[in-house]
Image (cartoon, rainbow, N blue to C red; front, side, top):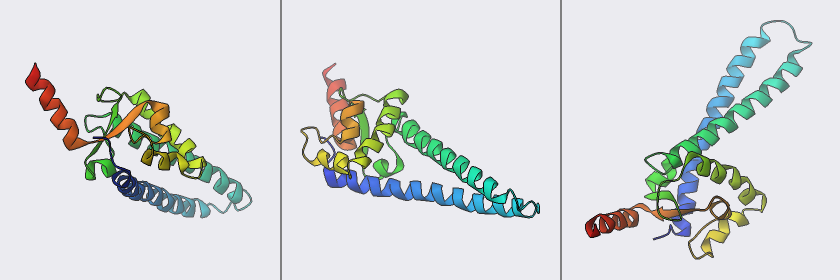
Length: 159
């Protein structure tokens, strides 16, 4: 069974907590590091240093988020922590585990779902396989874990 819209939404909110936590840790570390740099007494270049440091921190957070989503969704778990909590798994069109490359495409495609004023996510409520825009682009589906396990048992039993 394909993941229902509200289950997907709840999983996304749980993952948002993980993402927010990662971001907050990076902000706290940034403040600590910048405070340490402020004791250097080179205040002429401090604003420039702050600007560069903020860009580097933002890029690093983006890389960490990409790794979180892509590694977790292509791992044996086939899900992020939010999806695991909701009993969901990311699969390809054949119900198999996705590759890191496909998980990467799914992650970066989420920006398209976002810039469409979230319509990219809401279309999951109206597509046959309950796919959001990023699922359609990456050719993936989000399924309920219990149903996937039942299908795997049926496949093994028929062999």
